[in-house]
Amino acid sequence: MQNQTNKSTTKYYILGIVTGILAAVAITLGIAGIVRFIHVLVPLSQGNAMAGSHITDGNVEKKLALLEDTIQKYFWKDVEEEQLEDGLYRGLLRSLEDPYSVYYTNDELVALQQQTEGIYYGIGAYIQDGDTGYVQISGVIKNTPAETSGLMKGDYIYKVNGEDMQGRDKAYVVSKIKGEEHTYVTLTVIRENESAPLDIDVERRKIESPTVEYEMLENGMAYIQLIEFDLVTTGQFEAAYEQAQTEGMKGLIIDLRGNPGGNLSTVCDIARMLLPKGLIVYTEDKYGKREEYTCKGENAIQVPLVVLTDGLSASASEILAGAVKDYQIGTLVGTTTFGKGIVQKVINLSDGSAVKLTVSSYFTPNGNNIHGIGIEPDVEVEFDAELYKNGTDNQLEKAKEVLAEMMH
Image (cartoon, rainbow, N blue to C red; front, side, top):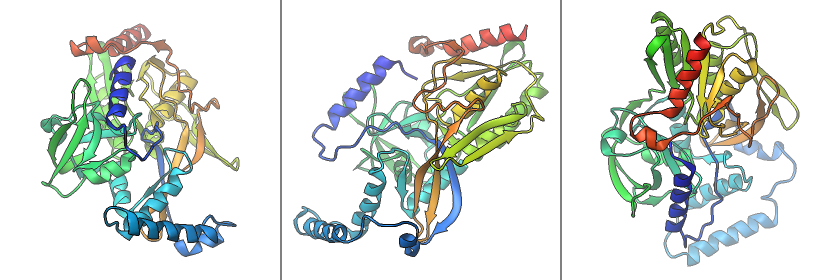
C-alpha cells in the first residue's frame, strides 16, 4: 500500500523508462475482477453462421495478406506465422478498447485456469494489471520462492526472461512466469526508489495459494483477510470462520484491502455464509437479460461486522462490500473501492484457444452499479504508509476501534 504521491512518482518514472517504444499501449485499469468460465466450445467453422457480415470479407483479407508479405520481406528479423496469427487475434480484442477483453492461446488459457483454481507451479506472488502498461505485484505469499528471492509488493514486472511485458495483460505475464517445477525464471522489475531495473532469479515450485489469513485479536475480535477469490478461497474462508466461532468470536473484521477480485461463484458462496435472505448481486447484459444470485439467509452473521476496503478492493470484493453496505449488516472502514462493476466470461474455442469478454454489468442488492465509481466507506481512513513502516496499520486500528463500539 502506498500513498498517491508515491504512486504518481513511480508511474511517471516507469513511463520515462519506456519512452521511445514505438507500440503505443493505452493505460489499463485491469484488476483481476470477476471471471466466469463457460464450458462451451465454439467451433471455428461456424463463425459465419453466428453473425452477419464480417471484417474479414473482401478487401480486408487482401490487405492482411499484403501486410504479412510486407513484414516477411522487410522486417529486420524472421517472424513465425503463428506469432502473426496470434497478433491478429489479440489486436481484434484490443480494438474493443476494453482492458478486460483478451485473447488467450491454449497455454495462456491453461495458466488462467490454474490461477483461478489457486494451485499451480509458479513463484508465489499475486499480480494485477497496473496503471503504467506493466503488471504489478500486489502481494507476496509467505514461505514461497517469491519471498525468498526478494520480490516485493509494488514491484512492476518490466521483463520476463528478457521479454518486455509492456501492454501485456495479467494472464499473459502469468503464463510466462509459470513453468516446470524447479526451473528458474528471471524477472526484471522496476521498484520505487531504485534508479535502475532489478534482475531477480526465482525458482518455480508447486504453490497452493493461501488466499485467506486468520487471526483472533483482543477482546473476541476475529480478523479474516481475503486476498483473492479463487476456487480454494471458499473452503479456506469457511475453515477460518468456523475457527473464529469456536474461539468465541464476538465481532468480525473482514479485510478486503488489495483484493483484486476473482470468481463470481466464490464470492457468492462466501456471501451466503454472512448475508440475510435476499439478493447478493444481479447482472444485466446488453439485451437486458437479468441474472440473479441469491442467499437463503440461513447463516446470517450474528456478531458485529467491519469490512476494510481500499482503492485496490475490486470487482468480487466490491460485490461483498456492496452487499454488506446495502443490507446494513456491517460498517465499511478505509477508502473508496476500485469501481469495477462488470463481469467477464471465458469462452473456449474449438482449437484450444479462448477469449475473455466483458458480457454484463453487475448491480448491488439495492440496484447500484458501482463501475467507475466504487463504494464509499462508512468511516473514511486514509492509509498511513509511514505508520505502517513502524509497525502500525492505522486502518486496521480504526476498524478495531469501530468494532469495539459496535460490540458494546
